[in-house]
Image 1 (cartoon, rainbow, N blue to C red):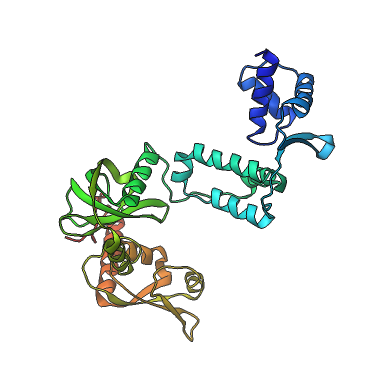
Image 2 (cartoon, rainbow, N blue to C red):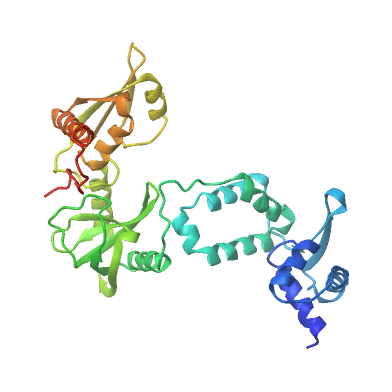
Length: 353
């Protein structure tokens, strides 16, 4: 194959990934150590249009501002074209994925973009994608930033869940969800569900010995082994839903009780809180003074108490007394840190025994 033929095939391959301008082609050529002038690119694009492109594809030239030319492949197919609403839906999905997923699956996401472009090249899909890089963003606040082997752990957990296979969890790092002190690893684990919560992708399931629910951030899992040992997961899916319904968030409760919880929220904070989902039993009542009464039925855990502190002096617990006392005690501990200049010590006061 001649050098020109090789170059044409490389340009054609680049076009299959999305539209190009002469500037883009020159930058691409420089990165790939291809010595070529802009004039030669023009000739190559002309030759591609008239000789190399298959019959179901067409090389189209779009002229933009200041006569700036863009070359793109359009694919002839009978599929229904994407609407602008459809394209925006895809863009929102892609850009609002957790950073852990985006970072660990770049190649897969790139394949999806190319597939969309090939199937819907006449829908200006690529234009909206490029615009979205600047106009639609996620802050990724509260999300992880280190993803060593993350894609492997995620795929292995998905495989185990889909194939109803037990996992052996050998060692676990820090604690997101206040696991009971009784849970010591290694353990045989029945994975049931992948769960995204507060910026972290978790795997939820049950310990084999006592059927205790365990929810682990994937980045917590240091060592594990896949097994071919089967378990029947139908009953566990129901148990998982029931167990999580008793929690505020996903953190393990301090005991097995479910409480009638009442919290007063200031007017402005209440207006904000009422618009969001916190628990399936949540209810709100606007009081005569403009404040809001929030009620729900769930257990007490670290996540609930931390959530109350999030609103600072805009939230006040009315009941139960246990929750009031726990919040007041933690407040006193925090004040002592400053008044007595105490050193910080790792302390999870709400970890069940």
